[in-house]
Image (cartoon, rainbow, N blue to C red; front, side, top):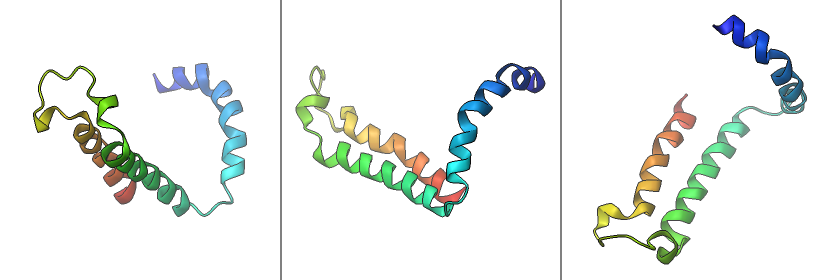
Length: 87
């Protein structure tokens, strides 16, 4: 299966990603991790603290804390932060 996918998609993906890879190769690689984690953390801060409740809870049936989508957004993004930090 892997060989089939490589033969099918290898050339188009190489044509698309090779210029990006050549551009990013000389960069210090921990910066990629720092930028990715920074984007996740900034998004969590924006959703959790800055985003107006009225935009998130337009038709929420109850006002319980566990139905707050801002909390679940932050909780769902935490595994991404841990993966980028530790792997």
